[in-house]
Amino acid sequence: MNPFIGAADSALRAAPMRVTLATIGRRVNIWLRFGAPQRIVRQDAYRRVAVFQPGAVCCRVRWAANEYGTVMWQLMVMQAGLPGEGIQRVAGVSPGARILLRAEGERRIKAVLSAIDAIEAAGIPPVRVSTAYWRTVDNRLAARLALPAYTAERHAAHCARSALGA
Image 1 (spheres, one colour):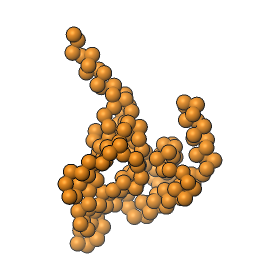
Image 2 (image 1 turned 60 degrees about the horizontal axis):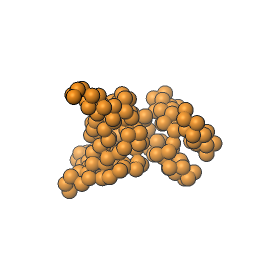
Image 3 (image 1 turned 180 degrees about the horizontal axis):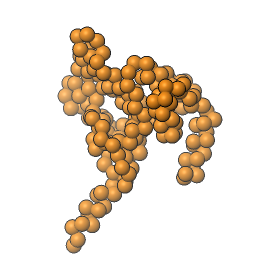
Image 4 (image 1 turned 90 degrees about the vertical axis):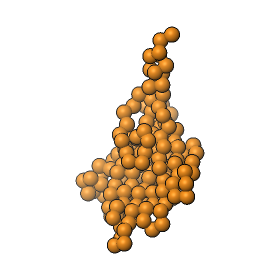
């Protein structure tokens, strides 16, 4: 029996993505803006872990404050890694994720939250939005340009492309 065969098989299987969520009074709030976890495991009164299957997309918002006000506000749209895919290390996400969008600061996060609200208002679940759209939003934020709208036509094109297996 070759011991490396099992190791290779397990390396090809992607581990589920585990996202730590927390609420500690008025100091820390880490929550999901959208995402469909397989399950949420409660660790204690303050912490939970959301478990996502490979390929799943979610949006995590991290906020922290001290006695003077907000000290950190971050939003990330992430995708759980697929078998054989490279992933990035992200604090509070195990084993890591593909970062599709990263926004920091009040102005940028409010712009992204407005875009997510508009997507939901159009009747499109944000988890079904094209990953290319989230990357485009990330690039537009970096360039300080207006964020593109995710229209029903764009979503229909994404769904048609996905149905073809592209």
